[in-house]
Amino acid sequence: MSDLVSDEPVEGAEEQVVPVYVYGLIRVGTQIPDDLPGLGPSGRVSVVEHGDIAAIVSDIPLDRPLGTRNDLLAHEAVVDTVAANDAVVPMRFPAVTAEDAVVEELLAPNEEHFLTVLDEFEGRVQYTLKGRYVEDSVLGEVLQGNSEIRALQDKISELPEDASYYDRVRLGELVVKVLEQQREQDGAQILDRLEQFAVSIVENQPGAPEDVVNAAFLVQRDRVPEFDDALENVGQELDGRIKLRLLGPQAPYDFVPAE
Image (cartoon, rainbow, N blue to C red):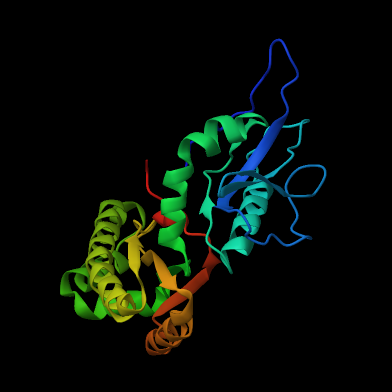
């Protein structure tokens, strides 16, 4: 996400500085739902415009620092709601700046760049796919397919717990190694089945050995039904072995240029 806005509230020394929260950037004229709630005490969001670009903003809580899970969820709810129908450049959470800096430091000097990025996101939306092995199923596969692991497990079962400590450590290392090799193959197969329906894919590093895939797909809105159907077919084939979870439609968090 774009990070051109400071993560910390601006403190004014000589004059009153009004801090605002910036959720994302849109084209002027993009419709924002009237009942879209913000994370500030007013509960409202609005837009600040400059030329053809606008920032989605709201007030912020002044009695506590930002950064809670509820704050993050409020941020995502705003940009994801807009992204469901229109192009949006999501800002990095939490994005707080002075009210007058929204135009002077964010919109005015970067208007052309943001418009170019919005052009890239026009008609597209992000979906995030996460997949995790079903533990009992995949461990059964590992035992059946690796004689060294089976032998080590049999050895451990015949020893007292104190005497089998290092063997249990070794067993864990072997299982993790096999899972890492297997998930690389399984993850690649899942992405191969879905990549034809996406404009672009960003693969994120799985967080745990049992995590198979964590990838973001940038999908044309008119191809979302095809993407959904393909994913449903993959899910049915993997049922009982890999549990898939799809998040979206989302703002294109993983596809915002780093600069």
